[in-house]
Length: 67
Image (cartoon, rainbow, N blue to C red):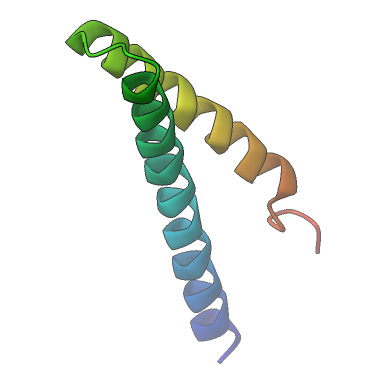
């Protein structure tokens, strides 16, 4: 039972991680487009930067390792 609960918890944590990374990438790319930058290289850089920043924020606030 404990293993099942920890696997569910890990699955939920991974879904949250994926949502944070994808959301950060989309938000940053949308902001780049809104500012007038539609070059593919600029959009890629914005998406990677946004994903990295939200990943860092997610890991900082993550409950993993606080038990």
